[in-house]
Length: 212
Image 1 (tube, one colour):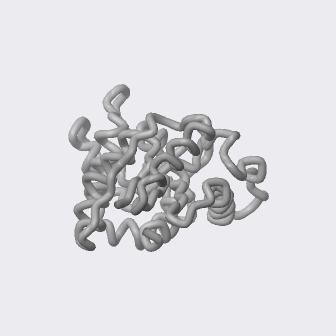
Image 2 (cartoon, rainbow, N blue to C red; image 1 turned 90 degrees about the vertical axis):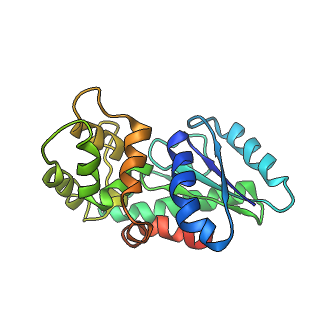
């Protein structure tokens, strides 16, 4: 039994529509998505995780965005990055996951924070973003998406900046005003990309699935 404690409906749909059929069921397993309804104070998250771990055979993992993680989560005082290479984000997120693991302190718990948001996975394939957008608008945005990814060293997991240019905000900016539906469109994009392609492009995501 695996419980995936996700930040919201987007993560839950990804577990149900992508990870279960493409990853877990092929191994004779399945995952149950638990929706946290957004980032909650850590005390509530900790209680929820420990409650899930009371199931005697349950493995529990998190599926929470690294971007905008609340200040009360374990390890956050040390999150501020050193100047320089954006790839230092991999070291930072590993430290925060280790801090979370030490706080929960249970052998059946596997921490995971998405770098930097779930929507970063979408930048694996600019054509998938373009195809999803075509349900509401004509034209192509492949050059814009490719440029965004190239500015992040060609690495989808490093697409990030601030609250106006985080992965989800970047994708939203490509849609006509008011037409972007976060859950429908973000999961719709990622569903168009083979899981093997996502894993090859996003090493932190791939490491998580490897642990599971």
